[in-house]
Image (tube, rainbow, N blue to C red; front, side, top):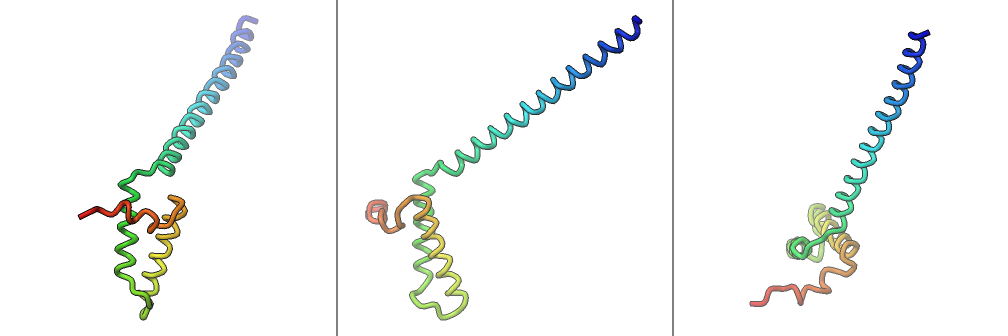
Length: 108
């Protein structure tokens, strides 16, 4: 009988430790998911003026390199890429790139 009690309590301890281990693992996974979510949210929403200026400069350079008419397939692709950059800028900042070009242009 003494051995039965030890075995019964041993099984109970195993179940309790198994539940505790699973709970701890679930808590760790949940913590990691929350941390990753915070990092992703910060990276997607945090925008600096330097990033905005770099994007504006990229768009300007793209437009300077691209003419009005696309004679070749490469020029046509470049013009489409510039247009896509402009659309992404508008989606990100809520206004077209030229709206603040005068206020952000360096004065000479």
